[in-house]
Image 1 (tube, helix red, strand yellow):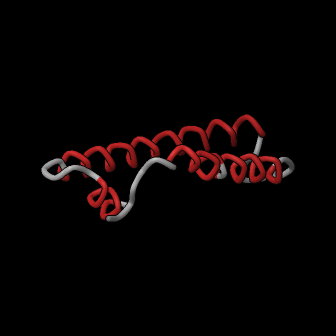
Image 2 (cartoon, rainbow, N blue to C red; image 1 turned 90 degrees about the vertical axis):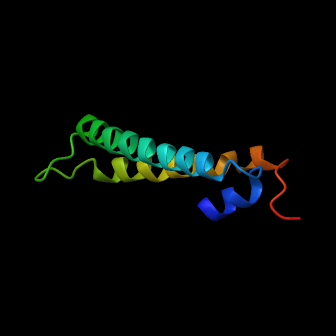
Length: 81
């Protein structure tokens, strides 16, 4: 991801782009951890109760599709010369 970003960014801002990408990655990790805890608690899944585990897994897998659905927003980006 960093190499691809460095190829499409203007010359001289590669370090800034790297810092931005790492910040977004770290923020995403924190949010996913918090949301995972929230959803697990919301569905009542515990170490002894797996009744709603299938619903939790379905929700988690559906949220993984969101970035794929947003790929259409990248149509205007030129990836190589």
